[in-house]
Length: 250
Image (tube, rainbow, N blue to C red; front, side, top):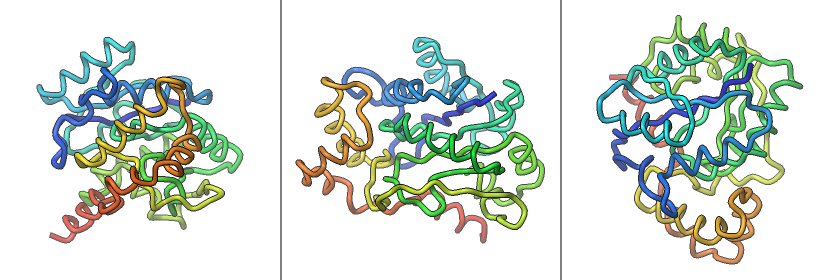
């Protein structure tokens, strides 16, 4: 069984409450789940949030949307993922993060197909990245996630779930799904107010005529509206992971 787990919480340090900020009248996370559900290769979709009282709002939103929730550790996200996958008896896990409201279901399916055809332990489109930041997809076998859960010690490995796996190519068979064109300089994730402004404008331009708009449609929009890219062009990719690496050494 292929289980997609979207991690989300309200206590973001850079943009608190971002996953519930409204895009065209619905919470940002709702918009992302709406898109992820279009992926054909996923058997089940859940949200993994924390067991903190403030995140009950996410549980309520998911219930309204008809998506199951697992509540676990706030800071040990690896444990949260593992316990959720174990509860739902997943064979394969797709990891998605709840700050990516333009996640592309076609890319999700393509990475899953790459994982299956590659007979591997882990596949992603982030090592190295060639897709826009915010189109990230990771797929792994349950027993690899379990090994990470048992053995990972560093803060960065516990907070970001998969580094223990992809940092060990000699131990795990890893496959990367690359885009035809390197678009890793584009930022479509939401960590800052400027990111949210960018995403809102993308939705306003594309969603009314095609609720399932694709990555290529966003690229076409940006060709017509290059000014949109300037809204959030000054932020570093994977800033949160970089900070976690620094915390490993303190």
